[in-house]
Length: 219
Ligand SMILES: Nc1nc2c(ncn2[C@@H]2O[C@H](COP(=O)(O)OP(=O)(O)OP(=O)(O)O)[C@@H](O)[C@H]2O)c(=O)[nH]1
Image 1 (spheres, rainbow, N blue to C red):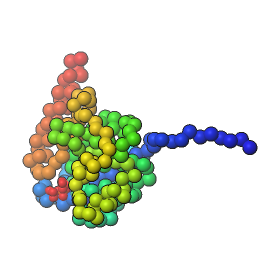
Image 2: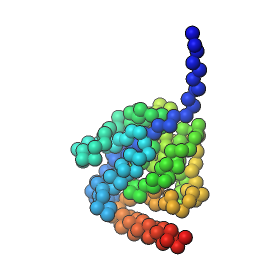
Image 3: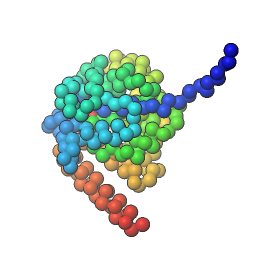
Image 4: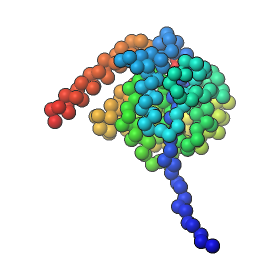
């Protein structure tokens, strides 16, 4: 009998995208995921980038109805009312791949290049997380499925900080200040809490895009 030797898979190429949309948007005043920027709902912009960079995608929300038109599967928290950590827990449990790119629904300028870069990082650590000017960005990070029981324990013990989870396990840091300018990294991790945040972020985005176009035409 011929014995076929198979190389052990140590790294799974597949990645699941999970968009957290289970929050209350109380500071924004209406569901911020659906609010349009340049005519496109914020969540649609995120969906389009994640479709390109993941094999599976879902939205983690309290109610599926507002997201029907986007054609993306909606899953619910198993522990409702426990914040983003519960969204991560539901995502890890539902994911068919070994790792989940977790993203908040209020990061409208998610960078295609940054997501692709993070996806390409081979790390044995269970978390790959960006470090921006503000610090670690756990709402824009990759988590491995092996974390699911740790996450559940933390939820059950009332330890709901996502950043606390990241800091408590081995994590690979992606320093945003070391990446090329055209990755728009700081914009990618910019989150929107209020209408004023949105106005400022949109102005910043428009300026970055026009500066970049000018750089390209001058080079
Ligand atoms: N699945 C899930 N996502 C959540 C939950 N709480 C917050 N989120 C998401 O986590 C991200 C960050 O949420 P925040 O902006 O801090 O909170 P928010 O409730 O959306 O907004 P505020 O009411 O203004 O605090 C957003 O994408 C939220 O939709 C939750 O309990 N479950």
